[in-house]
Length: 268
Image 1 (spheres, rainbow, N blue to C red):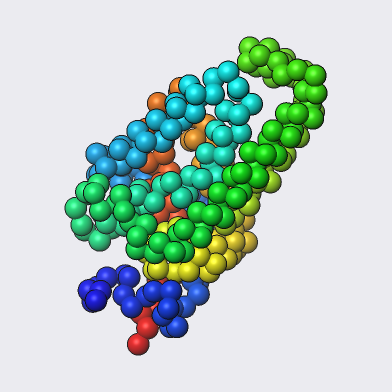
Image 2 (cartoon, helix red, strand yellow):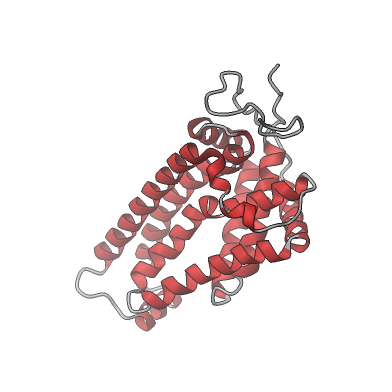
């Protein structure tokens, strides 16, 4: 039985009184406030937060080292990192949630937080996984269409990009990538925090995310830009920057959820 002050009360997927999340309109500058709060969470809970940061950085380095001779795969998997990010950052959401409730900043309880709503989180993970695989395949197709004879080596490829010799490839690659990024972002703005905090079902959580995007298009554009900018900054620092950037973004996503979704009314 849940405690009286627990925000996860009778709320389970089987609770017929569980309401659909009400989305609020927020200001255009709200994403900067979320980032600031994310930095505060990182400072207050540095050890568990940086643990996840090292995990993100380690995954990025492992991909780069393993596929260093196949940069076309690195490009697809690295950019797909943004698609899977909302699922991989669950532990960071839980750290922010625990700090918000005045609980200790501990790593151990965050490692298995997915068990709280395993079925719906698993369904959401499948959706993101399918998007990721489709993007990886689409990325390979774009490379194959523009490099029909032989793939250039990495130095030649980078040289072409810097000299802007293959603008058609860049337009196609980023155009396709933005489509998949938009779908992933629209479905995950508040989805995972909703499933963790309220045991909301996966479909309602994704619909609430789309609703947040539709009600706050300008704010969500700023938020998406900050996510891409900070993630890219982390990668450009040889993945080491991800140690700090990813925890900040994970914590900030929790605060975005708090601002975008009305507090739930406890059923009678």
